[in-house]
Length: 585
Image (cartoon, rainbow, N blue to C red):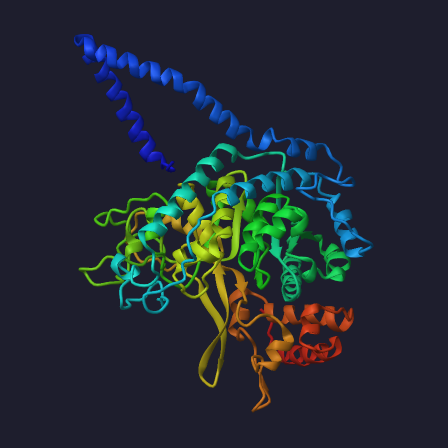
């Protein structure tokens, strides 16, 4: 069974109607054709009950399952059916007791958990059986700047020279993907009883060092005036910091959500989720209907709450931000996904942000593969921030779960071919693209934020632009051939490398040149003028509050084998320097 795209279905339907009319016309003249037509009609009539039965069985896959209905009626304080295991045995463990108690606040949790238990059964059913795609013809692909005229040009032929993908691989991946989409489409209508209707919220993945980074981001969010509730996904028991979840987060209208409880222990133990897969789970399993997913090391520079009422979000339901690089997706991905890419039909003719004015990126006799119609657009995607409407993009979420479940072995290498940042980042746009759903990618190119040392620029973060302002500029300059100087303001500082860990920044000579005993800023003094306030100073003041004033302890510093007092002393020294170099705006 193949998943047919909408345009194909329409063509087939029209062709079918014309064929039936011709058949009826010929049957008027020919007795033999009359007999054949009668036989066909009888066969179709006999098939109808079978098709109806198949649809009925698929449709009841979730809603009529006894375990599902029983669980919906159960109280969280009672043991649920053994297979789904939402109630965790605490055995006197105060952490598990707290997790069970916290879950009582979410009256949709049981329904949500049971629903996605069935989805994971479906994902497991259509698991590819081939070996992991980990063989390359020579080296993994090297990234190229999205606006660079680089060699070799990423033509179709060039993109087929890296990851080895054979015919058997394509057939197996295509078959399982199509079966999953077909079944998912039958059962994947938006279930309005598993999320809090109309709610907006911010979601993170935390745990160990990411809990500290998440708290830095949350404090910055509250500093800029956001009042949205926050949920932090904790992947497992080892990464669950009790004090962080129980005592600290509630002060900021935030709480931990615990992955084993959300998916059930059987699913959790079977899948061994890790790394980049957690973000797709956080999207699906958080309680909000609309979410802003943020990486733990990402902070908004202005209040992000109005994103949810903005035109760009209302029009599209999924907003994504760009990475620095050209897209490196293997052409075989499109065949697997059911796209027939016509090498003569070109969508883009160069690099552009707004309007139609383009910068050439290759020779006249070359065509970059991702400038062709039907391919994912350049540049590649950066998933440090994703804005999602679950009601509009629920099927996108279900498909992204599948792509991430089999991401490390198959879809991550197919989508990136070993390029920098390979992981979940392309799966959200890929899922929406396969399903032909509306989405918007911010057009203003991401910028590198950082500082200079000895005349050399050192990158510290990615600066992502305001999607609301970007969408307004994009719409106003559609069809225009003029160069556009207008640009939106910055919205996010994604401090992905190095992280905002004060001890690591000190130990690794990032905020201090120990050979000269000279300190420096992460983002430079000019950044203060650009964003209108001293973001870096505010961040270190928050560190002082947590480590020096409240003397809180965090797992990340214990792992560094350093005391809170030692980290506090370093924070105070850097804070003194930041104050001496700050300025009023």
